[in-house]
Length: 528
Picture 1 (cartoon, rainbow, N blue to C red):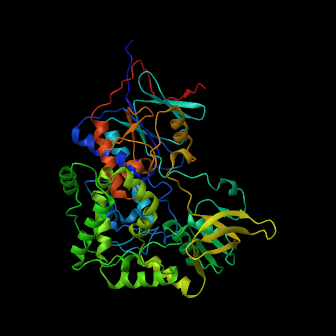
Picture 2: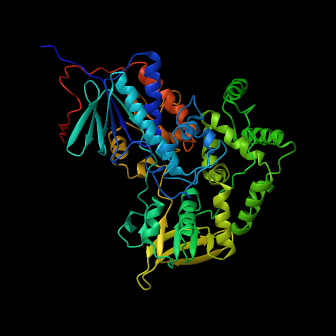
C-alpha cells in the first residue's frame, strides 16, 4: 500500500500580516503554476481571519493614519485596497454609509478590516483552485517543537504537524498591568472602542493610559458618543503625535533610497552613524521644502499639549508639511537604514530618540485632531506626562495613577472612575504574554533580539535560534521582527517583508516529512 505524503504550511496568527503572507503566497503560486504545499493551516483563535484585532469592525472614528491609496497588504499593488473599495461597494457601504472613497482619504480602520476579510476569502478560493486546502483552525498555538522531519505545534491537548511555519502573531501583549484586569471599570485595551461606550457611564471621569493613536481612538470614540465626564490622557512623555497634513506632496527618497543607501554604505566601508543619517535626512527634507528646515519649528520642545495641538492643526490645514512626506517615504528603506546603523547608535537611538521619533512619524488625521482640540477648548480633556503606577485606591474606590513630570518637578496622583490601558504592547519578547513566544525562547528555537521581538535573518526573515543558526523553514513577520527591521508598524513595510517570505516558501521546503498517510490535518494528542 502506497503512502501519500502531504506538505503542510502552518501560519500562526490570522491578522493583516498573516493575510498579506497568504495573499502573496497565492499570487506566487499562480505565477509559478506549482504549489509547494498541499495544505495551509491558519491558527487564529478568533472567529475570522483577515482583520485581526487591529482592524476589527469598530467605531467609524477609528481612522487609519495612512492614506487609502497606499494602504495595501500587497507589495506590488499599493492601490489594491482603494480599487477594491471602488469595485465592491456592496460589501462595505452598509457598514460605513458616510465614507467617500479617494486615494488621499483617511478611512475607518474597520473598513480596511472588511477588505482584509474579503481578501482572505479570495485567497482561499485561489489556493483551492491550485489544489491547496486552506483551513482556519480556531485554536491558539501555545508551543512548538521540532520533529525528525518538520515541526509539531501544540494547541491545548492537540497537536498538528507542519513542514514550514510562519509566525505572524501580531503585537506582543505586555503583562505589566495584568493585576488590574479583574477590577471593574478597568479596560486592558481600548478595543473595541464601542465596548467602552456601553460599559462606561457618560458622567464618569476616565483616565486613558497613553497619548498615542490607540489612546486617541478611545478618547474620540467616547466624545463622539456624547461622553460628559472628564477625559485624561497620561503617558510617560505626555506628548501627542503630530497631525498629518492635508496637502500631501508625493516624494521619492534620493540619498535615502534603497539603492542610495547600498551605495553610501559601500563607499563608507562600514556602518552608518546617527549623525550622518540626521544630516542626510535634514538635507532631503530641506530640498523638498525649498529652504533650510528649522527643526525647532517642528519639535516645539516645551510647548504644552493644548498649545501644541492648536499649532499642529493649523499647520496641517495650511501648509504642505513636506517633512512628513520625507518621513513617510522612508518606509521604502527604513529597514535597510536600521540594518546598516552602527550598533552603539542603535542603542543610543532607542534610549534617547525613539519616543520622539514615534511622536512625529506616527501622525494622526486632522479630523480626529480637531475633535481633541474641541475637547481641550471646553476643558473636558487634559494631558499629563510622567506616568507611573496605577492602582485601585481603597479609600475612594477610584483608580489612582501616579505622575511625576521630571521636566517641571511636578508630582500628583490622578483619580478616575474608569481606567483604559492603551499601552498594552511590549517590544520585549521575554516579557510578553504570548505563550508560544515564551516557550520558543525557553527551549532555544528562537532568540530574543536586544532591540525588540526575536532575531530573524534580515534578508529572508528566517528565524534565528539561540545558537545562532537558522531554523529551517520557519519565518517570522510583523511585530515579532521589530528588532531586525525596526519599522514593522506600517502595512507597506510588512507587505514587502511578507512578499519575501512568500517567495522563500515557494522556493522549496528544505525538510521533508515522509510516512504520512491520510490527512495530516487530523490532530494528535500532545505528549508532555
